[in-house]
Length: 441
Ligand code: NAD
View (tube, rainbow, N blue to C red):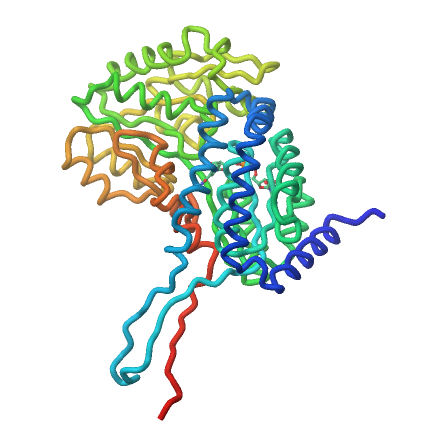
């Protein structure tokens, strides 16, 4: 029997809703058991997932374990360790007129059936980390991996049902038709990671059912480099953050802002850093990844002449390889400065001073991350106070999202809502207000 994607989506959601209605997923023991099984899946099949990530993105095994598998294991461990404490009802003081015997508290209620839609760039982590939060909160989950990372999608579709409660967790593979069919269903929360165009599609579909959404989007995350900093340290950290996963990281530094006097020395330091990390032939480095597909390769190739090539610039379409590239003398109106780069190209743009840097940032969409490299507390404080971004990293790119007790999410065009650690519990639960007034007397 051939069912249409819509019929299949409706069947899946109805089945999961039936399970949720039994109350099984609400049990804290069930939640912990699912997390322990997910952990077992990752430890027992970490190498299989790493192989799939290599097939999809040329990720080295070290990088796959560090940024996807071990990352998710840490999220699970942190959640298992703290879940009881996070779920404890929070008492609230009651006004005197309700009487001394009245009490009030907030309690965390699961939402029901939630949908998690993941992108291709960290296709395991960005599906599983939200699933951790959704399960810890006592929900049933439909997980939709990205079709653009087909090996990882297939591996997850095989592994997840082998480990988790299949009556409460379903993996739906597919592209636009399957996702559209899912989005037509009524969910209790939709958690979407990807680009803003599809984010709008998701939000429109969610509006039909008044379903709340979390949108984890992207954008151009700036890195400001102050004068008089140790540029070798800055360049090394910038290059490692930028060229990880061949630049296909939502919080990668998108471009560098610095003053004209600092730019030449920073450029030279970045050249040394790239050669130090990847050698003079990065194509031969096992640590350097590949572009996800030809479409993105062609898009990125078209940006390589947006400035003067300081290092890199080479590419090979058959290998989907684009060298780690630093572009100098980039003008704000250059093509590479118009949209999120999402690839291994790092433009250096100059601004006269800190005021101009702050204006440059504030003239554009609010970024997912902002990085500041300075030894001056005043500069750091000014940027923190005068700009808005999903996260702020002083001195080190990407690392803020590995701190489990920090919320990870965007603001404005870079998204809405957040997750990780206890913030996932806030996202995937309803905080119910409870007032209790005894009937006695
Ligand atoms: P993608 O193309 O894999 O799309 C993401 C998901 O949306 C996929 O599951 C896909 O099937 C689905 N989708 C695509 N088109 C759709 C449509 N018309 N209707 C319904 N569903 C559809 O990934 P992408 O969007 O190219 O991801 C890259 C973007 O994601 C970048 O902008 C990046 O910055 C952002 N991102 C953000 C985060 C974050 O945590 N904030 C993390 C990673 C990536």
